[in-house]
Length: 128
Image (tube, rainbow, N blue to C red; front, side, top):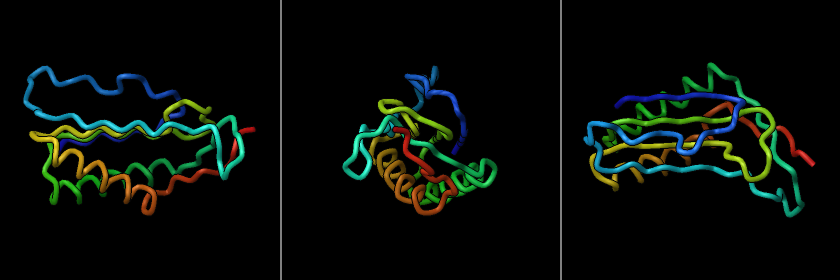
């Protein structure tokens, strides 16, 4: 599986990943995690994320490689932002290409579950 992982402070573009010119993938499952307007029931202006860049990137690549054994897919792209992120902006993008939708959705869901517990990226503050 081809894997591309980025940590960035810039906004995530839309679309974040163009369809392949070859037409080999039968599915592209995408997830944009958007910062909501409240945290713990209180209104906020955004969130602040901190990351250990090299550790976070290597952790995400390792997780994707492990999950690709169970859910064979063609490619994965992850963009995770760090620093201040305003309400309504994407904090994370995940795109999974595969021959069929089932594998793409399964890998994407399993990756999100592992991301929160295994990757050194933290919400460090709320922007008023």
